Structures are given as structure tokens and as C-alpha cells.
Image: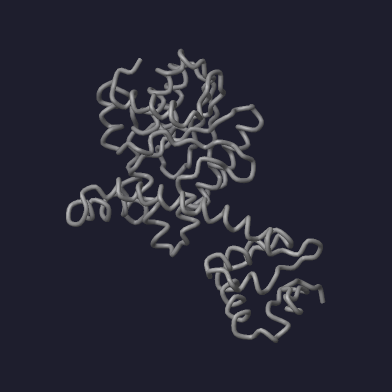
Amino acid sequence: MYSTHIHQQFAIYLLNKQCLSNNLAILLSISGGQDSLSLLKIVSDFQPSYQWKIGLIYFDHKSRSDSYLNLQQILNICKTTQLEAYIYENTSRISSETKYREWRYNTMLNITIINYYSKIIIAHTLTDLSETFFQYILRGTSIDSLSSIISNVNKDIKIGILRPLLEFKRSETLWIVKKFCLPIWSDYTNYDCYQTRNRLREELIPYLQQYFQPQILCKVYSLLKTTKADIEYLHKVTTKLYFLVKHPSFIAINYWMFVKQPVTLQYRIIKLFFKHNLNLKTTTKTIYDTINVLKTKRDKTQLFNTTNLKLVINHDWLYVTVT
């Protein structure tokens, strides 16, 4: 069964993560490209031992005039593997990459719930991870958002989204394709460098590898794992502190205990305070403006306004009132 080093690494992944136990129903997203067909091959090789129920899901974005040929290839794969398959077409002509991604993930989550799949498996590689990392950096993201790149759980409904190829480069999945003669489909739109992600893949990352850091993909992965661990720790500390500083009965937090905390924890406590009590998402600027006012204008009462809500300091407590 462990016919290649990638199969062996996948077995180690199953052993260490313990996320794909016996008799699970798993939904595998495929595109017809080298990464997804490599993953399908590996998962299919392990299926007899683990007795998984495997379902395939494919999205036709209709971004090319010849996309029907790609669809035909997917249908041939479904017929050959005799696996349950779900095929969706972009009938609304979604144009942006972000909306494409939202459409795909929402559809997969719905299929998972309706058809009782336990896990979603996506063929993201180390290369994909690095592309996403640089997209986030160029967008001006926070470390919280960076840590979410390698998250394995959908926070809203607790469905496992697994990426077992994250430690493999595209060169390794291409090796699998060649070794087993897999019928991959090359999408020429992936080489259109007018799209940011394609330019990162074809130009920026190779440039960084050649002139700055040959192991840039591994370095990015290492950074993201460390960041994720740090953020998980900060979340736990924030939650503990929040329950220490919050008022036992009212929507309020202890002012003096709050201002003694480091700024990063003050930021997270305020963010949690608004979210927990008011289901209110606040911008980073709003939170930091609030923290600065709390530090410099102790005697002021009205510190923050949104619709009919007012943040007020009274004696030792910082609380919310409705005006």
C-alpha cells in the first residue's frame, strides 16, 4: 500500500493527526489537475484499509470557452472510479477570485451537511499555502488571519477541512502523476499573470527561490505553524482574562484590571467584549482608538458610538449603555 514516499508521508499524517479514522465519509474536491488527482490516487489506495466512503465534488467555473472538455474529463474519472460525485456549474458567472472561493466552500459545506460527510479533503500543497500567505501579506492582514490559513476546522459548524498535502510541493505531486500515469488536465488560465495568484506562482515565488531563499516554501510553512500556535495561546489567555475582568452581572469590564494588560491583550479583550455582548464586529482602527482614549481621557464618559450604543466609564467599570 505504501508504494511511494508520499504514500508513506500520508500514512504518517493519518497516524499523527488522527483525523481520518475508519469508516468515515469524506468529500474530496477535485479539479482534474495534478494536485487533486494525486490526492485522489493516494486516498483511493488507502480506502480498502480504512473503509472510507469517498465522494467527489467538482466546480466548473465557466471561465473558459472550452471548460466543457475539462468537465468531460472529470466525468470520465467519475465513471472509472465509480465514486459518488457532485458537479456544480457557475451559472451566475461569478467573476472575482474571492467570490469563486466563497461559492466553492459554501457549496461543499452544504453538500457535507446534507449528505452526512464527516470531512472535506482539499488538495492544497505547500505551493498553494505560500501563494495564499503572500496574498494575505500584500493585502495587509493581521497575524490572526495568517494563522487561519492552516486551520483545519470551519469555526461556524465544526466541519473538518483537511489539507493532507500541505507538506508537499507541486513538484512532488507532479512526480506522482508521472509515476502512475494519471490523466491530468492543464488549465491554461492558471498561467494568466494578470491574476495576482498566478503572478505570485509564476513570477514572485520563483524569483524569491532563486535569489533570496531556495527553501522559501518550507520557511513560510514553518512561520505559519509557529504563528498558529502563538495565536491559539493568545486566544486562551484572552478568554481567561476576559472572564476575570468582566462584571458578574452587567455588560461591563473592570477598568483598572483592563488598562494593566499589554496592548495586544487589551485589543483582544475589547474585541471579545463587543462580539460576546453585542455581536458587534469592530474594525482594528476603532478598537485601537478606543484603547487610546481609555488611556488618555480617564474622566470622559462617551468613548465609543455606534447607532444607539455608548461606551461609558463609571468608577471602576467600563460598560455599555443604550441611549
